[in-house]
Image 1 (cartoon, rainbow over the protein chains, first blue to last red):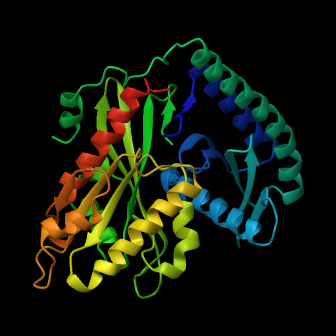
Image 2: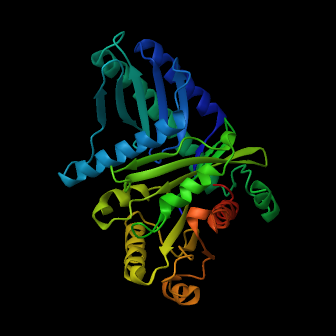
Amino acid sequence: MSTPVVLYEQEYEQLKRVITRLCADANAKFVFLVDKNGQQIAAHGEMLNLDTTSLASLTAGNVAATDGLAHLIGERGFPVLSHEGERDNLHISIVATRVILVIIFDERSSLGLVRLRVKRATAEMNSIFEVIDTKVDRERDMGIALDSPFAEITEEDIDALFN
Amino acid sequence: MTFINYASREINCKIVYYGPGLGGKTTNLQYIYDSTAAQSKGKLISLATETDRTLFFDFLPLDLGTVRGFKTRFHLYTVPGQVFYDASRKLILKGVDGMVFVADSQRERMDANIEAIFNLEANLKQHGYDLMKVPYVLQLNKRDLPNVVSASDLTAELNRKGEPVFEGVANRGVGVFDTLKAVAKQVLLELRKNGGG
């Protein structure tokens, strides 16, 4: 089985700071980070009633399908996707090869501005994800099991979930 | 691939329901959705054709509760059963933590079951997974129909590694939660084995 993706508190706060600033700098309504398997990582913005869980899984499905299309025509992938609506628009791009950055913006911003701001934020987030990877690798090499809540889970704990 | 978020104290796991077309994968999710309390579930998303056949996937986020202070959330997906959607079926398997194979017990669907299991093994392999090592449960669905193969014959034919087998009538909920519980249990025990990292 593959290794779990891990997000620590410190890096989460750093990511949160980057997307909060990106949201302001790009005049965006909402900025959202999701991993390629559809799991939400962090979000910031003014759209309070947005169903972020569905947004995460559909975004991941969208990126997976577009990657599939890219491979069919001999491309490695389409790193940037853009959807234009009547009021709101979506800008989707890839960060650190495995994370998807989604920006929702309206007429208060523009595709050009969003692209410009995404570029800087992406570089910052790439370094944060590098730090996470290094941390996980180091702990594994040193034989330190992560402080997992599941290391001592019992069958009773699991049964209790279904009661 | 399990996602452990220490900041929000959440753990997310991905479970995929696989099987031949019209076997009851979406019905399993629909039953879970209908019988789960509103605060424990998200929206059930179905990307389906106009005739209600799954086109890309169905998706249901499910909060099971808290284990050792961590909120445990399962993301349930189905794949399209129809063979010509194989390309999209493959995409859904990416990052899977546990699998449920929903077999159609009707005699005339035996070949479709076998074809779907071989297809599952091949598609998992393309993502670098081995069915023998992935948490996996077999559900024999549609046991209420008259023309079914006996459970023992079906199990002998479809069983891959001594996985848990459940008889189901998904539209009435029979076996649905037993199946989900069995696969969830394997996924969580797998996390324990890996020490969570």
